[in-house]
Amino acid sequence: MPGSGKTTSGRKLSEALQLEFVDLDEEICKTEGQTIPDIFRLRGEDYFRQVESEVLRGVASKNGARVIATGGGAPCFHDGIDIINNAGTSIFLDVPISVLLQRVKYKTGRPLLDANLEEAEKKLSQLYQARLPIYNKAKIRIQNPDLNVLLAKIKNTIIK
Image (cartoon, rainbow, N blue to C red; front, side, top):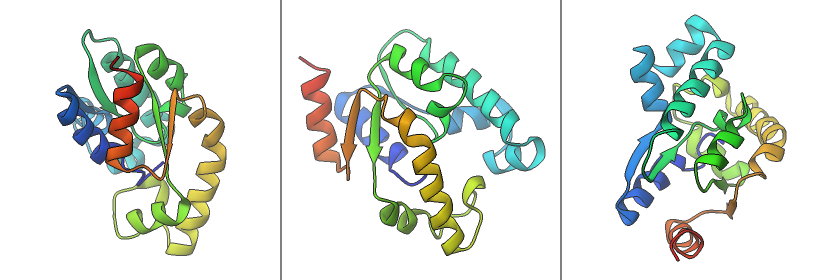
């Protein structure tokens, strides 16, 4: 979900585990030579989701362990959750809508949330309900994530 802390937690997790960090959105921007809002505006969501899937497949197929922060929609399109689960350990950062709204309400450049506060809250709730069945396929679910809980859970699950 937008604002769940995927990139922030991913960076910290990669540092703690001493692994490469890959931000899928940054990789998409490099590949396309455009920002994500520009891709949405100029080419549309369907085009973006296709590129996102291709970049995800490329990153997931590389050898070696890494931490990948995907966009919130990456697991939900073009078998993204299967690609992620086949590549390693997937984590669903389950954050309450009220917290997501607080985190994203002043940020610009989120194509699916360019709306007033009331509309953004409604859109976040709709996205959450629509995406939850896919997110629930993640190997690990952490509610109200905090980095210490995340690290402990990952170390106990992956590093044995």
